[in-house]
Image 1 (cartoon, one colour):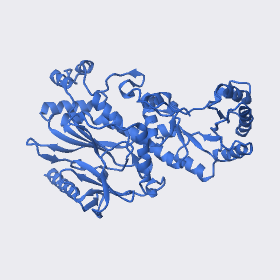
Image 2 (image 1 turned 90 degrees about the vertical axis):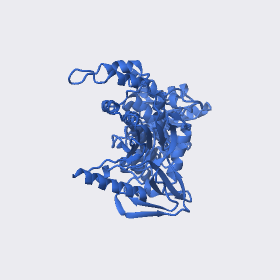
Image 3 (image 1 turned 120 degrees about the horizontal axis):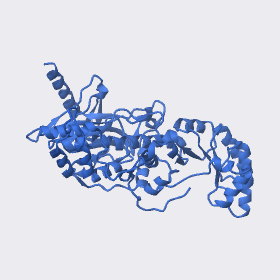
Image 4 (image 1 turned 90 degrees about the horizontal axis):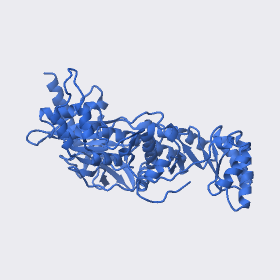
Length: 505
């Protein structure tokens, strides 16, 4: 492993490259209908009306019991750098309606080019464990500005949160063994690879094979030789000897090019030669076959030869389920290299994050609470200005409560299960608690200092340690209690009745 010198990140890839195209301004990274609505708000005179939106998800990914919040740093960078420049205006002015007329009024485009974001943003810090319907972000500000942020904020939060959660699950399965992210070659494009490397590190991975991610984010790098190195020589032993001579201080042999057990024996012979020159073999890597049985046999051969400290690294289509099963079978693997299944999320293509309007000020400046109704109860959104309060005792988290900032929360909190109002939690005021959303931007001004990446990674581990083990199970996990504060639940119920009554007239 190559540990990077501690330093500030080199650059923010989200402002420098997307795919193969250099980009200096990502402000048009949005869906076209967001611009269409912004234009319509402007024409209707609603653009400056104050609004509140929340970004949340409805189901934890991978049928799990927890989710790791991630992506806030990119959100901060996007908001700080948001501006519609001359090239954006030039492009937007070329768009035509179906009748052949300019799609946008030039006065609107000029207004956009002069606009500075004045939104306030409260967010759950990266590395925090979160649950369905809890807001990861609360955005408050002019309606038009909040609307323009919908698609980019979802893009910047959904994928990193998915991958950080996957990494956390894999690291839990590894039970303390180091996990290295090896997914660059299978990731979805350049930004997919970079975002995945950062998110995987936050989720608990100890290193990455992605050199650019190491440079940008100061993540430790890990890598071994590939089969082509071995195949480039007349024999495996010659290949190992050559590599040991060139890289004597970081020597890891990939032993399964031809025959794994034979490869282990060859690695032992070359390792003994290295010892004579004062060097040591660091590890061997298994990349195919029955990893449980091969690792057990390899460990015995290594130990019998006096190489008890040589580690066994495993790769090959690993995920949390495979690693858990290998652990159960007694595999003698001490480090895991996980690629495709980690950086793509594999069995789940995306987090189902959504962005919903929950309050809008009227002409007099009074809040009018809003919600989206649906035939599906799970898709009915929550009204209000939300905060999350987490209750805990003796270092163990007990329950979360979503409450409204306008109505507040009583010392002795009563919370209702939004899907079963007969389930009520009474949380004693003697319990310890903390609110999860912190202020990041206040009316366009950043007031939050982002912690170093290593600190975020440690936060993830601390967060996971504070939840009961059942929440972290992979199969049929325990459902952590999240309720709505009673007065907010009653506001929601009354608003639903009011909307339904009005809709039948």
